[in-house]
Image: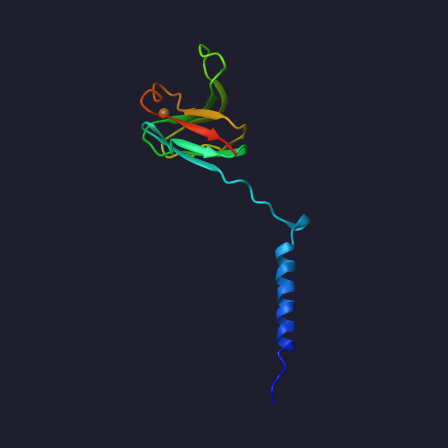
Length: 135
Ligand SMILES: [Cu+2]
């Protein structure tokens, strides 16, 4: 008694359609995940990682002070005039040792930003970095 393979093929076709239907299910029921945050650690006297590249758009900064002194993180751009001071576009407030600051969100254009700690002379001691925003 041989069975026709037809029911198996039909079952496979139905399963495929179900899989395709699930895969294409999106629309209004879709849950959009937020863009991943940029996580940085600051200590004496570094920003880690020091050089970061991200795509343009909104970015959440999550910064933790892993050092033994207080630190902050300022996001700046170079002004057109080389004599002028950098232009601050965002700031993560001073963090105590072990503290993670309240995250800040910035909408970033495709360009280069400078990162640094503005407490005392920490930037001169090496606590700076770059954030390159590019497609
Ligand atoms: Cu610092």
